Length: 106
Image 1 (cartoon, rainbow, N blue to C red):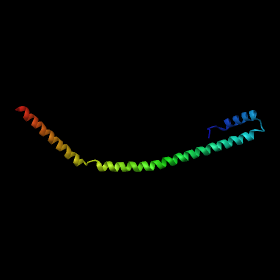
Image 2: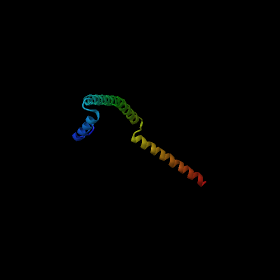
Image 3: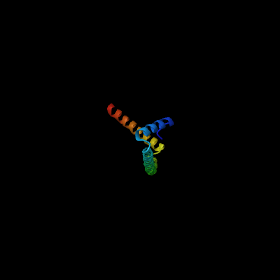
Image 4: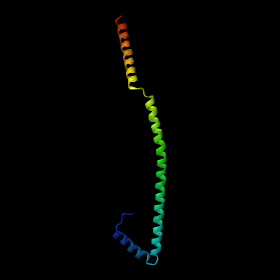
């Protein structure tokens, strides 16, 4: 959990034995164990809550994005329509160019 080896744990235990004394060491060890248990429990509850929230939001957002994609597909004109539009625009521009040239020649 804390990425400690057996040697480090023995050193910490020996220091705790010297500092606290042999009579109070079991009580302190129990208190530390309970504290770690509560911390782990709270951590797991937090992870579970966040996971549920993300799952709930992801589902609705995915549906919204899929609906938006369908709407975009429906509203975009097809390739043929775009080609026709561009061809018409080119004809209008050519006609305007011809009219301008004719009017400047006179």
